[in-house]
Length: 257
Image (cartoon, rainbow, N blue to C red; front, side, top):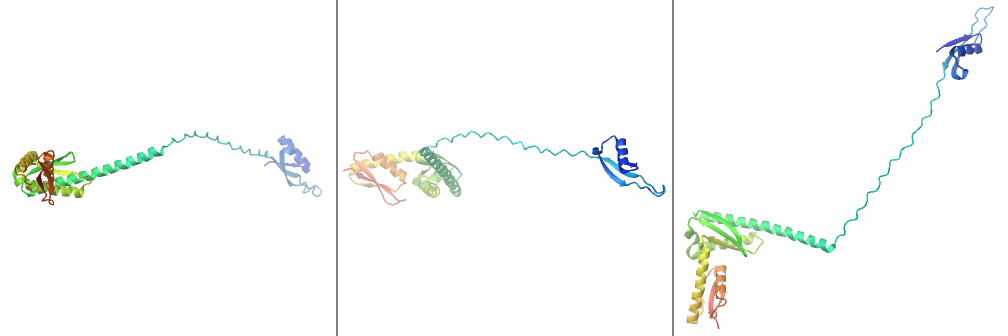
C-alpha cells in the first residue's frame, strides 16, 4: 500500500490525497507514526501514513421473487357411461355360462381321447390291427374302427363289439360330462345289424299275430331294443316292452289287446 509523509499527520494526508487525486472520503487512512521533533534537530521524524482506496459498498443482493408456476388447467371430467344393472348381470351370467361350456368341452374331448386310446390298445391286445377314429352324431359319438379282421372283432352275434362298446360307454360316463351314447362300428356292421333287427321285429310281430302268444327275444344292447320298440310302435297287432337287468335286458313282444 502507498505511504506518505509530512511534518504533521494532516500534511501527510494532504500529500497523499494530492498524489492519488482523491478526496478523504475516498480513502482509508492508517497512521503509521506521528511526527517527532527530536533534540537540536537530531532524531526528528516526519509523520507517516498509509492510504488505500476504499472498496465500494457491495450492492445489496436482490433476491428474485419466486416465479409462480402456472397452474395447469383442470382436465375436463368425462362422465362415466351409465351402467344398466340388468344388462351387466346378464353379461356376467353369459360369461360364466360360456366358461362352463368351454370347461365341459375340454373335459368331454379328454374323455373321448381316453376312449379312443382304450379301444386302440384293447383291439391291439386281440392281435388285430385297426385304426380308430370318431365323429359326433345326434345324441352321441360314433367310433368307427377300420380293422383287418372284421369278423373276429365283431364276434358271434356282435358279442365282442358290443362288449367293447359297453366298456367304452362306461369309461366315457366316468370321465366325461355329457350324456352321450357311445357307439362302435366295424365296417358297415351297424347298418347291416340295424336292418337285421328291424326284420326281426316285423317277423316277431307276425309270429305273435299268428300264435296269439307273447314272444321273448334274446338279450340285446339298449340301442337294438330301442330299434325294435320304434319299429313296432305303430303296429296294430303287437306291442313291446323291455324286461330284465343290464346287460341281460331283453324285449318282450306282446299281442295288442
